[in-house]
Length: 385
Image 1 (cartoon, one colour):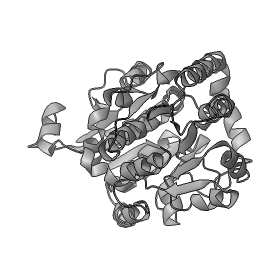
Image 2: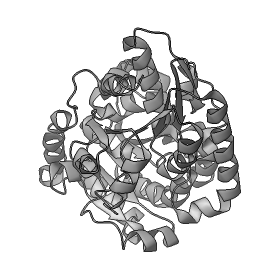
Image 3: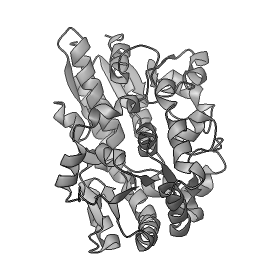
């Protein structure tokens, strides 16, 4: 058996983690490694072709999964067959527990010499802490992004490490100057606009549920703020859904996802779907508010199980409601516009208070092993070769 590593990422955030992990593994391994797996554009750019398009797996919540279940089951069988044929030394699954855990459960019996490592601990602290024991029987190792997560798994005998959250190195992804960005998107340097950024998430369901209230909020602000422009970083495959909502209004500017971090740093405020992107805004010091709308069935099931006071990770890590949150019916254009306006004008020092709180996050999320989060993750994985 050669030093082969099979990486499975089920959505865009996992794809980016996978790509960074691949680069770090090559950098520090000191030996030739071979890779295969399931991923997106980032992993493919890192030289790992995907077994199939990961958009087939990028769904969230029971109501969204059910219509796509036949396709997901097909992809599950395809992944299992491919791993069994290759018999890799290590399988690294990244996030997407609904898919990855079922795959690993089957593979444990079919690949007796393979070690299984999961990257991004499931949020058992938010709901169903008892899941930690089941996960501990499934994997040989677990890599956590948050400092308080290992304590849920180590009592069950699972080798667990807090490797740091990738957002701590976010500024390294910003290579453009302000002038280059303004030139690319035809923004005036002589009369620079006030910039609001809208961030819907990466899933079609998120865009369909949040698109209308986000754009309503933006239109309300545009009526009051003559020199406002609205940046909309979004993956290309979501623009077919967004275009009918925006219409032909030129004040909404589509931004290449590769330029999104530069867009964040130039923004006076943002309205974002709760999730990784909200933590990215926090790390870059951007005042913002978050919202989320679950499919009704998913929400009714979830609200009975969730055990945390906030949905924004920055609020949880900081121990206070620094960022306003709007859920379900409260996630409407009126509420979002009012809060974003307060941030834009720094009402009662609201924007400044957010920036000061966000400055604490890098130290909280840096990891315990030294090096970048990707390097810490790579060292952990290489311990199984």
